[in-house]
Image (cartoon, rainbow, N blue to C red; front, side, top):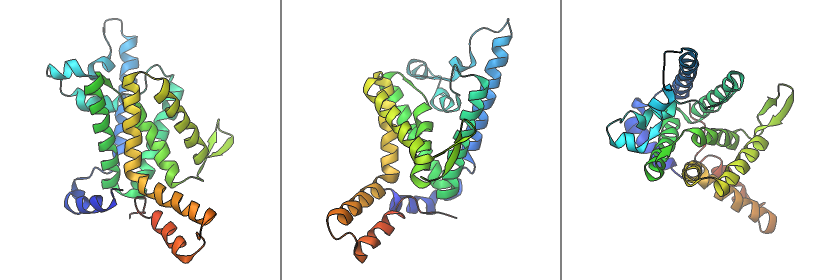
Length: 237
């Protein structure tokens, strides 16, 4: 849905795009995780590194403006080191793959819009996190590479479209049952996905019904299907 606007913006501002953005974010998350573990092991250190960097509306309004950005680099809390490594790896894998497919500028815009959504949610509800933004990377990756397989538990091959379906179900369930702040974060994550994939989803669904119930097998229908696949997810080199 943003294809035309993004092309115009990329011509003007593409040179400012951050290459390998997800690598920097994941590296920051890893360093904070290690730093937190070290701080917890030191008896003379009081407080948490995370508490100094998380999104807190009241503290931001008091002048701690770094929290508007620093919360993006916070790793998942209360996660064991092994699971943390896997989670950071997949964040990097999905984000880096999207950047390779879209180009650095488009991926920067995707993550920036997701971050802005989280910030808006934080100012409305008081707190925000990067959790659902990073979960949306998995769904975005699966939209482009639905048949890509990963080894679940190191031996069970499973396609990304099924993992993304489970991820989406979990997010929808959390949207229904979660706290207001969590619900708003999920809504903004879905809005971001719709901005980048909504056009393709609409045209592909329309083509499916034309093929199923109408004259979808015509050349015109096939042309629309091909066009849908290249609106927002066209490969950029």
